Amino acid sequence: MAFLDKIYFRSSTEELRSLLQDKKVFVIIDRQVEKLYGSSFPFQKVFIDATEENKNLATVQSVIDQFMKMGADRDCIILGIGGGIVTDITSFVAAIYKRGVKYALIPTTLLAQVDAAIGGKTGINNAGYRNVVGLFNKPQFVYVCSLFLKTLDEKNMLSGAAEMLKLGIIGDSTLYKKAVAYFKENHLMDYDTKEDLEYLIMRAVRYKCKIVEKDYHEHGPRRVLNLGHTFAHAIEKCSPTPISHGNAVSIGTVIASRVGEDLGKTNHKVTETLIADFTAIGLPTQTDIDMRTLMDAVSKEKKQTATTFDFVIPTKIGSADIMHLDIDRLRQLVLPAGA
Ligand SMILES: NC(=O)c1ccc[n+]([C@@H]2O[C@H](COP(=O)([O-])OP(=O)(O)OC[C@H]3O[C@@H](n4cnc5c(N)ncnc54)[C@H](O)[C@@H]3O)[C@@H](O)[C@H]2O)c1
Image 1 (cartoon, rainbow, N blue to C red):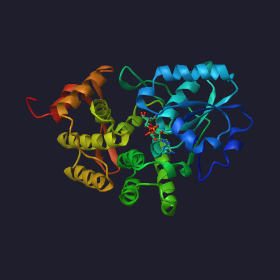
Image 2 (cartoon, helix red, strand yellow):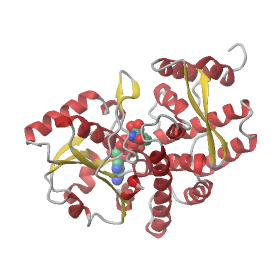
Image 3 (cartoon, rainbow, N blue to C red):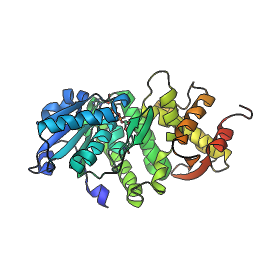
Image 4 (cartoon, rainbow, N blue to C red):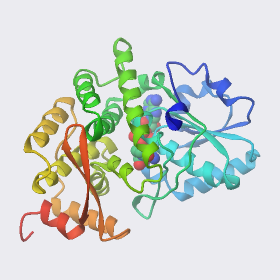
């Protein structure tokens, strides 16, 4: 399996230098990660303040300007070290800098290790819309090292847990059950349970790679990975205070399950199970934001693309369907009549 072959699951950074061979390395690194682990990466670096506001073309431009000043040429390799913000920016920059240079990723959040850094998809925000600029660009390798997770806070561990659960819900019920059991007990990376977490990460990555191999450019089956994301993006946009991506996905998944019920595709017990499990883990299942407001945000975002779109619903734990809905139909399903 081509994607999986290039993912190294390791407990330390020891092997990294040999993977980089004798290439000239230029690093894009999360400023927070630099403070914690910067000394392990003695290369020329560009620093990123990891926020959604900064995941934009202005930051891409600034990275390129800095690489030019540093003299990065076509034969270099770019190393992206950080969470999903940095891995998205890195893949994009590597695709366009000097018409494309090699790159590799070291994801340092759980979310990036199981999802954002896996699969060669990049996304840059524009004009308040998430991931509207992007492309597909395969890295030379992805180095998944649990060591970095020891400094990750509870909020970001849970955010990654939500994306891991998503992978279980859509296609691997064993992953789902084991992840629920793990995150009920553990919210921070703990050395006593490190191997259990590493197993879950590897299992989640294997499943994501399986989907990506089938449909790299996301013309069909890969879209199932968007479970929970239609409403998650709306929640992130409308939330008066910042909400983690994983928390938004968790709420979005419950909404998707209810839509599945209304379409007669999802048993009510599935929604009940999701609510009970997410709550036990500490993930939210509802939002104070009015559904009309969310639906307006969904409409606006979808109108950027088309009037009909793919909406993913869980059909049971371990299986999901991609429904082709039009925006008015979705509105009818989620809003009470006349709203
Ligand atoms: N390209 C894809 O396929 C894909 C898939 C899923 C998500 N994403 C993107 O990923 C982004 C979210 O990624 P994220 O949740 O990793 O967010 P992030 O990159 O913002 O990281 C979250 C926080 O963790 C901090 N951090 C990173 N590593 C740390 C460490 N080891 N110890 C302590 N703190 C650390 C960061 O400074 C940041 O404050 C979103 O922009 C989303 O669109 C992309």
